Amino acid sequence: MNPFIPSAGRFNLHRFLLIPGLGLLAVVLFLSPAPARAAITFAGTTAVATVTNPVAMDPVARRAWFVDARFGLFMHWGLYSVLGGAWNGHTLPDKSLPQGNSWYAEWIKARLQIPDADYRALVKDFNPVNFDAEALVLEAKRAGMKYIALTAKHHDGFALWDSKVSDFSLQATPCRRDILGELAAACRKHGIKLGFYYSHWQDWEAPGGAKPDWQPQPTDAEFEKYWQGKALPQVAELIDRYDPDLFWFDTWGNDAAKKITPVRRDELIHLIRTKSPRCLINGRIAAHNPGPDVDFLEMDDNSYPAEWPGKPWQSPATMQNSWGWHATDYHWKPSGEMVRLLTKCASLGGNYLLNLGPKADGSLPDPAVRRLRELGGWMAANGVSVQGTARVGLTPWGGWTRSQDDSIRYAQVHHWPADGVLPLGPLDKTPLSAEILETRQPVELVKAGNAWSIRLPKVAPDPWDTVIRVHMAATAP
Ligand code: FHN
View 1 (cartoon, rainbow, N blue to C red):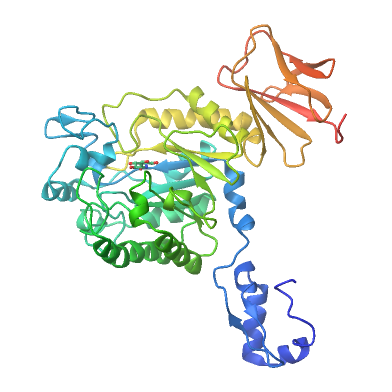
View 2 (spheres, rainbow, N blue to C red):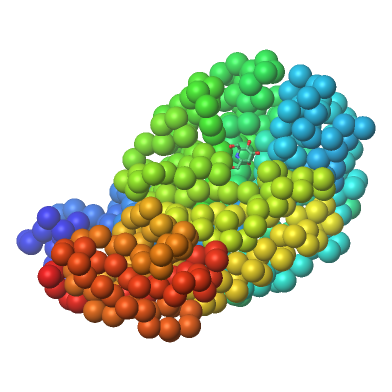
């Protein structure tokens, strides 16, 4: 039964349209996007419109932009950025402290045991005078990224906006600007989707928020107070103020299950779906038990599945070891490595969410800008083999993506064959011709028995990932 079409005999269009106010309301709802339409029911011969399910929206339609995007920018930015990984003579990782052995600079308060008052005092030094939302969005866009996910609140509990729910937020700093508002406007202007990371489970400032696993935990009643008093209201506030396209929640390990129960998970999902049916929700809302209603699965940090996990998915990844700005973390990944990770994700139908940790003044570290531009250069020539594609799978030499209609397949060659012959094996469709995507240099398809291969130039034209475009016949051989 089609839920949009009321059953015969119970609905009379002519009569329906003659009921002025209600008719107008129903027509508006009927013409509006799927969520409201799916919600209308009609009872008896008098047209009574009731919204029975305000949260319904076709999940496939909601996720479409995300599935096409493949590449996004993650941003860890907050009070911890002031310290750049070091405090009071200690620099992360610091094995002299019981919990100091971590590169994650956004964890500095917990790992270096910074007293609450000292950490809170950092607000006076958070003054992002060099934050330029438009320049940032354009940097991401030129890198080939389609969305940004920024830490609106990380585990330290500091809100990067003027929150009415907590005074541990941007208004406590010298900054009088609406950072998230500026970013939202720039994203809208340049067609980039915007998401917010919100630490719903860990909150080291609110008494009832979950704490690092080596510290005493709040009781369930205390957590519930935090949940109702800070977490849910702040998520609502973010939607009301900025209308984000995505929420990035964060849990890991087994402890989260004690606080993020299915009831709380679904309460948060319902809040978001009710306020914004198009907003996406990631699987780490409850990594231990995401349930059926999240929009995509989130892999562990810098982790990649070996096969398609059965749902849209994403890998969050660092450029350095740290997520938040760390001035002496010199472990910057080469761009080629990141291109290979991106195309590995695409070959398995997943997204690559690459992180950037701005400095406290809002400026971007030079090595990060360099890498974004290098990635953008590769994407300018090869983005068509990544964005809007469908997965085919991984191979010993790299992976395959394909166009939606499967008329084209893209071989992502990460490991160039020493003998210049790329083995494709048996194919389910006949390949007609092939060329190097960037230069259009033709390459020769060879068939031996039922196995195909491609004769390539001796030296890889692109040492990061040379993409071979293969035109396929419409039918199987
Ligand atoms: O503890 C956080 C960490 O700081 C960072 O935000 C990452 C990003 O995936 N998530 C948690 C650890 O998995």
